[in-house]
Image (cartoon, rainbow, N blue to C red; front, side, top):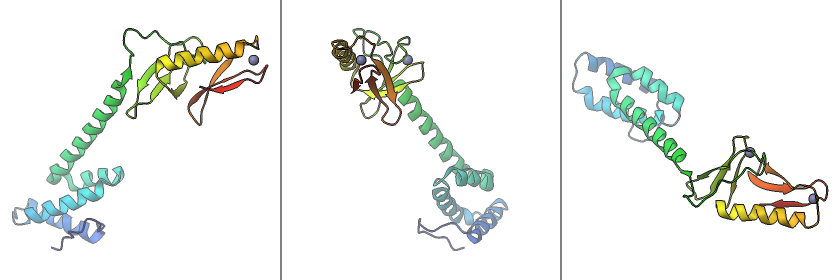
Length: 182
Ligand SMILES: [Zn+2]
Ligand SMILES: [Zn+2]
């Protein structure tokens, strides 16, 4: 049986049939094929992990003979779940000194702060907004400064919103055309 050792090589239908034939022989008790089958399995797995569709098909086609594939796949899934969970656990509390930040957009909810892997602060509120900004204490003073600045020449309230493209917080006043990015 020819078995490609080049990992770039795509698994053809012919190769697939050969693998299936090998698997059948193996089931019939030909231990000599074990190594060939393993190699085929390894190549198939490399191919399969390139996209999840192929991956699922690999498991379905190869069945219990390739328990190895299945186990590796489960391992990968578990790893992915662990990473996702880790991200959620990066919820940033800010310690006991930090007072809750009221959402500047809805002015009702409390901002929940997440510290991302790249050390960016992500603020979310139950009103649905999500934006990135500096650390909570800096954001608190930025908000105060902007409100004060605007109040000095305008009596209307400054309105905050999130720029959906930049995911950044911005302040605007329709009465005096005041505008600022926080
Ligand atoms: Zn809100
Ligand atoms: Zn104004």
